[in-house]
Structures are given as structure tokens and as C-alpha cells.
Image (cartoon, rainbow, N blue to C red):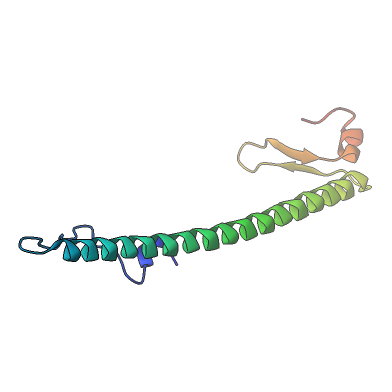
Length: 114
């Protein structure tokens, strides 16, 4: 539940009860009622923050796992590229800038590429 989706949203402009002619007991009752509403709202917000924190931690764990998998795959593909018996050179289409090459491409061209 997002903070804007409270089951009982608090009104920004709450009109205080008219205390003209009211006794002290009515004032305390109004105060206690307002305090209870604030406390309930605080508890709802606290629950939402705890829930969202848990969700964020779960997503961060999933992201870290995904990053680790990508890095592992990148290393494996790099090893495959390095062990290929043929030369591989990858260039950018627009400016023909070198993106990557393997050791066999360097050997075939008798120089360091890039």
C-alpha cells in the first residue's frame, strides 16, 4: 500500500471542533480522538514502510544475483572468444571503432589491434 492509499486519508484542512460553550471534558475527548487518529495513521505508515523495505531488500537481492549471473556469462563468453581458432574483430558500424577482438585476430594481423 502506498502512502497516498490510506484507508482513511487524513484531511489537510481539518476543522477543529468548536469549543465555544463546550466543557473541558469535550475538549479532552476531541484531543484524544485526534491523537488516536494520528497514532493509527502512524502505525499504518510504519507498516507500509516495513513492507516496502522488505520489498526493496528482495529486489536488491534479485538484482545482485542477476548482476552476478551477467558477469559470469560475460567471463565465459570472453573465454570462448579468446579460445576460438579464428580471428574475430567487432567494429562499430558508424565509425568502425573497435569494440572487441580476440588473440587470434591479433596474431593474424601481426600487431596489436585497437
